[in-house]
Length: 290
Image 1 (cartoon, rainbow, N blue to C red):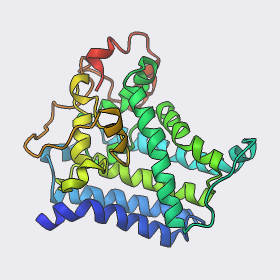
Image 2: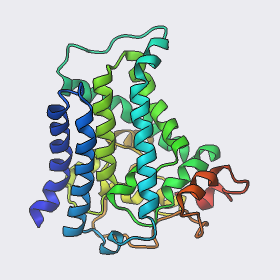
Image 3: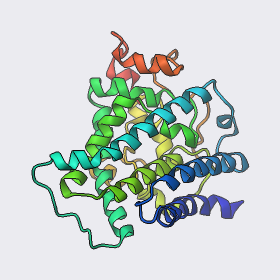
Image 4: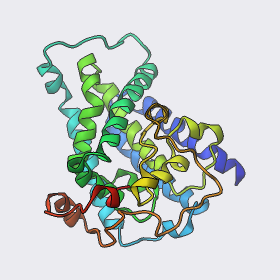
């Protein structure tokens, strides 16, 4: 089991990205990525049951159907955004500079690093601007962390993050095949970041934004949870002064996560979509955010 604890995260991430590169022929045939993502979700759930961080997080909290609805809607929106890329790129008046001659794995790495900047800053802002927090709070309403609910976001907030992450990539002229691979990489990383696997990544937790450091981020109160905003890396958290290292001695359990001050935050999918538009849905930034 110790080998699984240490090896799970890097093998999962590298293994599925390598499979994506091969089976999609460098992103030029995106259809296999759908099956690969389904396989990644199944592997994530299987290992969560073999080696759970918190066994109670594996049981449904009345959230399985809701999380499935979020995942379907959000991944469909991601697919639509990539399909629309040629049109969007055509509307950009001045673009260029993308290293098309690089190997596709190098292009994907560059895309990940650039997207990580935009997503991290958008995430950081979402904890400080009330309008953004209204939509981001949907993601923070989770009461347990397991890989699949990493895909749970309000579609408006996801759109905000997508724009923040991809605008510089579009301006640079990132090709559509790399965009397909980046979209897949984001989904794989979200599965790891919210995983209920008792993974041990050692010093990597200082640079890689996987579950051990990210669990701090979901603590209910802002004074505890306004840390570790990065999606792929912790680099920008170090720059912003918002990095909090993983602490193996601190174990999180049901009751630690959620939206503070909102114990009855809506749980149903439709209610969560409507909630950010409801007057009074946020009662005070310092009390309800995480």
